Image (tube, rainbow, N blue to C red; front, side, top):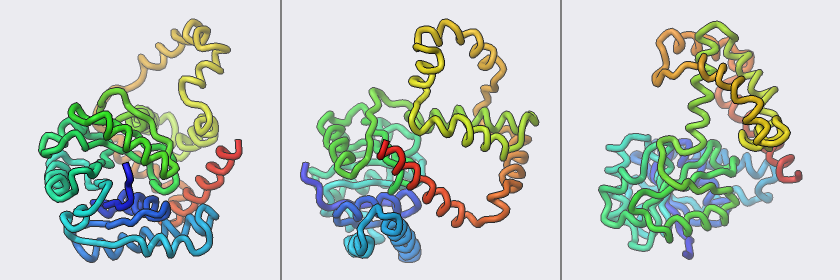
Length: 312
């Protein structure tokens, strides 16, 4: 499919990240949200993202301004998607909200346009129930920051056509993304299910007084976090056990002891909420830097890490 014009519906952090990615890859973009004020702030965010890419040599000199000129804005969904070849929706994760937005997008977008959702956990089977051409609807879940992290998760609903999935996969590859295809739908997909399991255990360790929030973060970042960018959970057990079969044979009992003592709650306990809020606010980096400064530090470190991974 020949994709040239892209619409970003929803101009929050995710929409801004998509807009920066699309425009920096040469595509005309219309960024949509409900008010001019939101859009003004969003364009500033997109510009900041593009300038960051240029400052870190991920764009050539002058390409940030050129990319920004390829972005138009609109407060009307119909106007934004009316000539789009590809639509990326990034509104809050609420079925009622997304269904209403998809209904409007479906009515206004050309018949050939691909309609993608940035949802972080909802199912396309449910969202596409409200559209007249459900075969062209697909989930494309990015990882923040969208303009830096290469991974995207792609999963269709029950009525999504294979052609839509393949065309979306190919488009993401053109953007320099690394797409993974889910074989079937599951809430939270791969990334957020893994994150949810890790977060619950991190919260429980703080809640039970095992360690501070800062030390839990240190244990992750200076331990498994150093290894995780290059070795996933399955390759890790293959290496740790001198072969995956031997790992299962030798460590299954040890892991059973751990799993038996782990919590299974599905909502954060009030006592834990208070402790993690206090724990995060007590972190040295949180006390000494603003949210914007932490974000810039994170993105700078990500650039260095990505360069190392790509060179390897």
